[in-house]
Length: 314
Image (cartoon, rainbow, N blue to C red; front, side, top):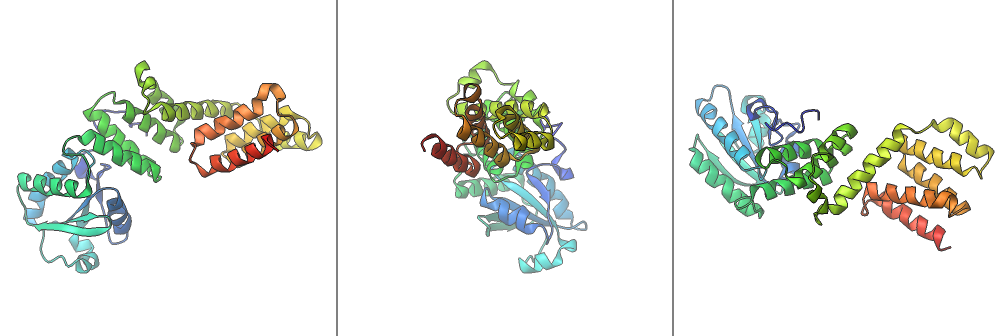
């Protein structure tokens, strides 16, 4: 993550470091190919060290995948080391490239075809997947990165956001996505630095407003957590005096610092139940910040928003 905002996109694809290009095996094929192909087409290159045409094809294949800007991915299979997988997929000659989409093989070619044919093959896959990569590869890459982030693969999403910034420096959506990914990877300082790269007008973008506000709130909560007290003495203080709202509020911050948002929300609700307006509605305001940081669609937010409504309108 420390290298997330570098402009070169990381190590060369041939070293297997690209978010778009992986080395896969019989054991990892399900995740690398079947699962990944639910979001974007995946090319699977079956090769071997002794295969001359394989060595001709691979660099051209990697270059074409990178040029597609995240619309497709590439998984490389060493045929000698994965003979059972080759047998299951009926690979009869090398190199063979199979394309997977939505978990199923949809196309293939054999031999060291020229770059123009590789591009045509990939363009066909992109059209099949219904992406807009032919006209707007950055938009297609953003869509893929956002999907990865939403499904929990923050590291791969961050790498794609980085690649987007290599093609479109200062892209507001990619910066916000990268900060979001950094937060999910517990890289708070990285997220803060990325958010500083936004231009003032970026914060007025209606498409990004909600996401920026959520990240800003999450960073504020992180700052609070850095100064939170210890749970045990605060819990003892609350047990000794249930009306000690300040101790209970500090306990909520301590739970928040430990990552236990449910316990933090319970403590804040307990204050609201006893004194709704304590400290100028501090408990309610803090609870709303937890909701904003989690996102309005998050199950945590939905659960505790219902509980807050029950307390306020009971």
